[in-house]
Length: 271
Image (cartoon, rainbow, N blue to C red; front, side, top):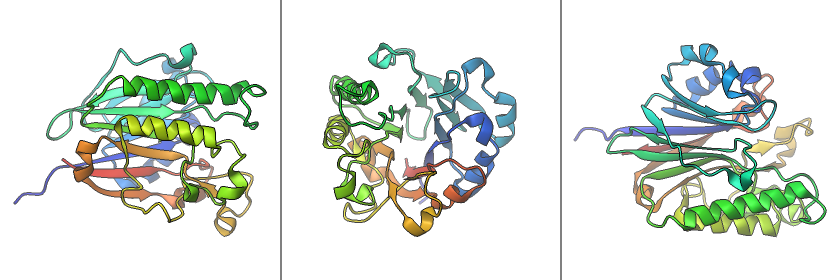
């Protein structure tokens, strides 16, 4: 029997595309993804570095960016179409979401790329507008997906800026009052996921095992202390769960020269 076609989707908060574009070669060499989803590209659409990325072999590119912060992009070996009906989340036009349809084996796959607001430092809606925006964004996203029951062949990836499980952070007890792991954020993210999705990485890694994708720049020896959080996620609709064939968290990328504080996450499906 011939092997079923694969689809590898990688997601990475690159933390400035123009600064770190050369590191995409290392990602490609390590993971050989068919699709690369980027967050925090920090580049307006008119300055997107198409020429610098052309050598990487991803002929199909979509992006939504702005100057200095936020921004999302998709680099794909597969043909794609960009949806023109994606919401303007919280009416801020802050370029945190991109929806494309991939011409994938076996039929189209809808791919959502998200960059959820970080939320500032104070976990208080009244005192911190950034935290309020984050909670509102997550709630609005959850409501939007809840209004679309029966989604199929859909993948959602990105820097969701929330570590929902006890072992998605280095210390559940010490981080309960730290933005990214507060009960309000966790409840919102879980409600969003449960509208339509399964956590594809935790499909492979049991919930009682520590798992991180981000380590702070402030930590001088991040490997020794290993005070990480799992902020970067990949979800799939239940119909795609049987197609899940593997995952990779490219932890070594945290040591790349001038690397991001996030590392790439990849899922592989056989379609």
